[in-house]
Length: 98
Image (tube, rainbow, N blue to C red):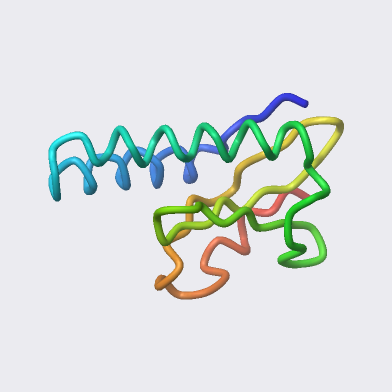
């Protein structure tokens, strides 16, 4: 299944990569690679992840405190948030596709 980031989630991804690279050289690349691996799993098994709300699921990154919040709509997966686990919960709720 095809995966697409909505614009705010793409900004969050870029910000997280930049933040991690500032913490340690190459750490942002490790973060990005983990995001890509998780996206691959989501695309292969979209229903396997935890239900987060009536319209969303949550995939937890393995080595970073982030969740990928996504929804499936018209045979496409939309990543609606790259959410740090310690950030205000459900700050992204208004991004859900209707």
